Length: 142
Image: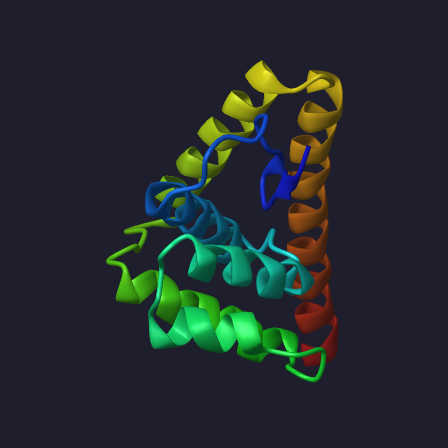
């Protein structure tokens, strides 16, 4: 079983451009939410290119080596998503897609508890990071 930006993927099926677009959509939602590990992008983009997503930004992301900074990788992802017309009008819209992806993964996972824990931990980590940043800004002002 492989892993996606939202947790374990369903059992393998024949790959198509539609699979790649859905994975790109989920990755973009995770990026918008700050839940995406940029290190996961290069292998994903390589698979997307094999599946038929052939934009310059997908190709650049697939070719990105370990020297590429996380910021560059995330910017390439945002551009690749834009190339395919994928965008989220709000954080809530991205969160809804991310949550539905996690629920779908739970339904097909051999270990739905682990998927739920990963989902919960991702949001807890996101909130902790944001609170720490706010506290840091407030304390620097004084």
